[in-house]
Length: 112
Length: 114
Image 1 (cartoon, chains in turn yellow, blue):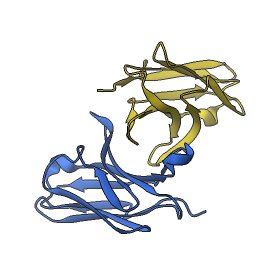
Image 2: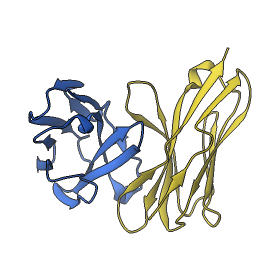
Image 3: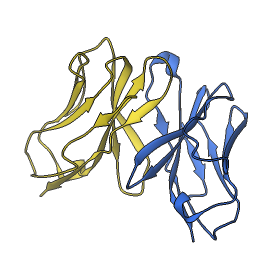
């Protein structure tokens, strides 16, 4: 059974800092890996999707990497801003079906 | 694009009552997913459909839960009878998996069973 872990559960950083959010998964037979952002009281917004054949994806100040063999992904946020404060969730899609298994998320607070 | 639309946004009802949650997926998407989010367990997949057909309902917690997708633009998740432990935020999402697209989520229904 796939398990996705995100540690730590919460992170507080000063504005402007570059930061890395980690995600690990137990089964490397994945279809893709996705990073989502969730604001309080809202649904999830997809940030980046990395296909199993890819190593990384970039969007603006965000860069996500994937190392399938070690079961790890990182989300890099450059020059963090208070508006980046949210919960970031990592999810992996199974190779055999369309199921997404989610980590419990990292709640990020960027202090002005 | 209107996005995934869920209703109601909030539902408060008494234990034992029937609850129906509704979802309209993004037009053209052939997969629809129902999730439940709680502080203790995080986000859990309950059931998903492909082309209106239920594919995997192994995440549905009990027989009190049922889901239908009568057509490509509408799905319901029903709880009957409801219990306090069903209190959670329920999300609906949709995508086209074949094109390796991300899932698009609605804003959820916050359900409170008293």
